[in-house]
Amino acid sequence: MKKTEKTNVMRILEQNKVPYESFCYADTEAISGVEVAEVLGQDKNRVFKTLVTESASKAHYVFMIPVHRELELKKAAKAVGEKNISMLKSKDLLPLTGYIHGGCSPIGMKKQFKTVVHASALEFDTILFSAGKIGYQVEVAPEDLKKIVKYETADIVLLTPSYISYYDYGNVVVNDEGSVLRDYVSVMKELAEEKN
Image (cartoon, rainbow, N blue to C red; front, top):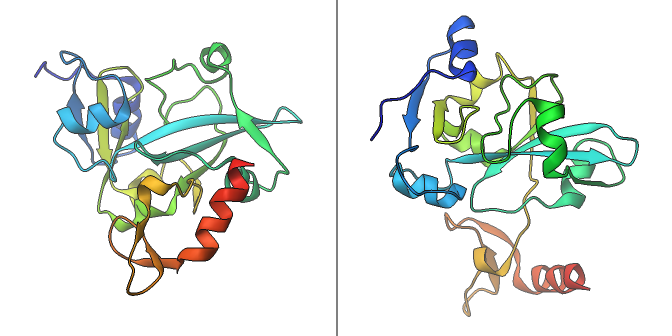
């Protein structure tokens, strides 16, 4: 793979004496976060994407979730104390953050916005996320990230059928790692309500 170029995110990490690893996938055809995880040989649960949202009052919030998951807007709004939020339009991302779609990092935005990281990040010693430029990722310990981005953690992802396993012998819902979440019936009811 191509030699990693130093991005502004990497410079900020160095200025704050935060240890990190950098990865370059610029010479691959990877576009989606899942493809990036695959070309880097990383667990997709540990590779995070950075999403920017907007409230009705034009307040902005940043969310970091695993690349293969979807942001649950209701949960995300609740996590930041808003009634509802929506995804920021792609055309507004660069003027607001200084980053473009596909190269958005929680570090080094033009302004520091309230940030919420999916709680699963704390299950790992390190997580990967954009280094602020398409083709580049950094790997940082969640606790070290807190030295630069004052984030909170919450469950902010959509629980979809593709992440649910149903066991006849227990009628329970488990996550990817096999932990019991809730009983199957209540989750199915919730999913049906979300579709309506």
